[in-house]
Image 1 (spheres, helix red, strand yellow):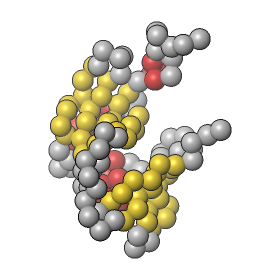
Image 2 (cartoon, rainbow, N blue to C red):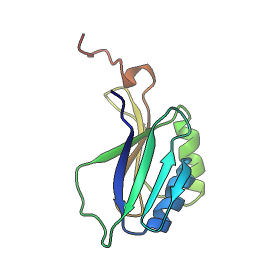
Image 3 (cartoon, rainbow, N blue to C red):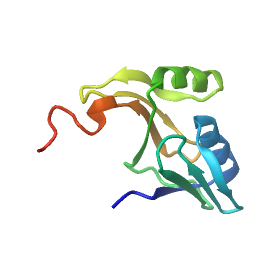
Length: 124
């Protein structure tokens, strides 16, 4: 089994499309109610579905990995993206930066390297 995509709500679809393109995702479907992106690395896709109201806050976090996290943080900050956390080494051995998209969805840009799937505490 493989994960095909994740679809999230977006109350301002145009602003959200522009946001995710700025993050580096490649837009492959663009309609008045739906947008779909390819991630630049790997086979994963990511989708937005237009909703009338801003989605309520929830505990979901969307993770995008980059081996150039600090460079991406600098690039996005210079482009006006506001982060709630600058890149920081976490105790779970990932380096993470945090922000919200235009609809309030929680985003984590991170670099996990080998620890992404093989942390020292991985179950055998």
